[in-house]
Image 1 (tube, helix red, strand yellow):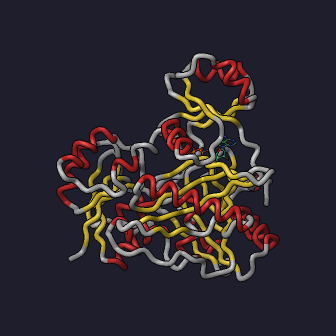
Image 2 (cartoon, helix red, strand yellow):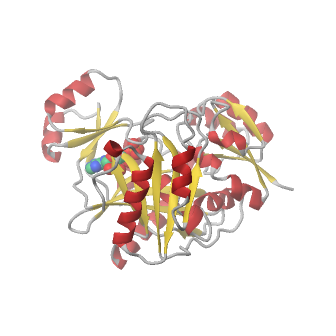
Image 3 (cartoon, helix red, strand yellow):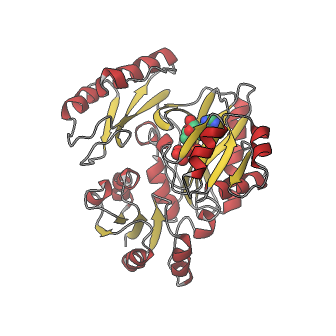
Length: 386
Ligand code: ADP
């Protein structure tokens, strides 16, 4: 009998589980606000409700065996009542609890002994001026909840900019040191019901205005750095007793230090390359983990791969057929188009992955530039090539 899996959230992360669900015989039922959301097209059934609507999740629970998440902006307290009544969430709510608030997440990582940037909560600290003096400007201000793709993240150059934001908002913030990283790295890791752990190759990610533009796999880092990142993933997954896939974003500093920036308790943009470049995608791995199946191999089946996000750059209802065709003509490429009905600046509309036979950074740079030149109008093409 097939497993019926409920997913809270029906965006592209749920949509990309579609093929793996078919392959594994898992039926997907999504809870998502709009009929136009990407995963509605691949779901067996859908409940149209906000992701934090726990009453809707109670109905979802009647239609499925297990519930998982593609979006973490849920109402944990309300979901706990359902868990008490026997609803099976994977990852379990206890594993999500320390991760949903950026400040609490930082405290959890620090208390585990993992390396993190210096930080404090605002409001919450008495002597803000001396705390800030310890960090030095610029500092980074992050809304503790509901931030994503740079929404709710601000680089603050001085006290007057800081006062402007905090005096005009009721938001609770995490304040942290600005890390002058040389690279941003990420890793996808999965843990099964039996505690088996599978880790994907570490990747380099490139953000502009806090939004991921592209990802290169594998990262060029030392063997020791790779081992350190894998050890971080093991420690975190085991400590949380986590079931499923999670993404870990990291900073690499000029002196070779690794700091954990953020944990995403779900599949993650930095792992999209795995759909085309790995034996088992992060989406299949997540379905395997939450459905109590054994995990599968995560190795790259090419020398390297580059994933470029196709970000909206205008308000428009086009399906961008012409650009998509040009992108699909790039050798060894696969275009994933999420089928969103409206483009908005910065919105993730799709992505393209290109596989390479050699790990050659000049070739990677050329491909990224080629993709961005096809996709964006000239003034929106990145000037910051690796
Ligand atoms: P979000 O949840 O919105 O993705 P992140 O914490 O991942 O927020 O921040 C988005 C991006 O902002 C990061 O990928 C990085 O480029 C930049 N950033 C975040 N925190 C810092 C920091 N402490 N120092 C320097 N840059 C940062």
